[in-house]
Image 1 (cartoon, helix red, strand yellow):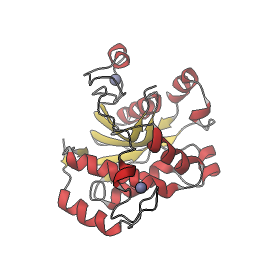
Image 2 (cartoon, helix red, strand yellow):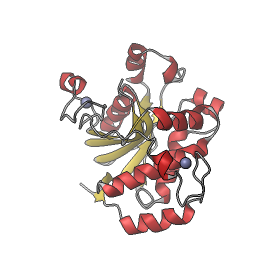
Image 3 (cartoon, rainbow, N blue to C red):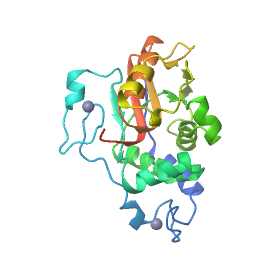
Length: 236
Ligand SMILES: [Zn+2]
Ligand SMILES: [Zn+2]
């Protein structure tokens, strides 16, 4: 088992140099991506299931769904709730051709990892965007998130694994929960033999069915432990 510990000072140096001096949301001059007023508008996922990160009234070891069926992933780290400003930024990044709006959210995630001294697995992959979304959007938002993360020395020296989609189906957000669940179990695969510990990067975790399908594919390829890192979590 190998873990890569975050270096607070290195991340700060690399990141502070690349920051702009205006808030990404309200344009107030600011040394950072979001001013303090806009930061307060991000809903922290303070109380949640400790396994799947589903928002709950109080933090629980396992939520009802995880108690019913243990997922194939071992943990989801999702520091924000998919509400308000966070939801607005992600939707604009995904559907309104404003991918730069992912940056303040990734900055928040990096700060969260540092603050809570969270260790990440040394191998990582992203949830691949469908071909349809990729041609509509022109970019893969999860790859952009990984690229931003890799600017901090959290992932730079880590092994990248390529996860692929087996079938081309229409975008997940247009489908019902039941449809997504049945389709997702045959969506993903990798041609590589993967290490025991893998980090899976996603933008938003909704039902958890995509993370489940990816984790299953990674386990089939040799992973023993799959940690999911997402910008945000819905309460779905
Ligand atoms: Zn602002
Ligand atoms: Zn749960």
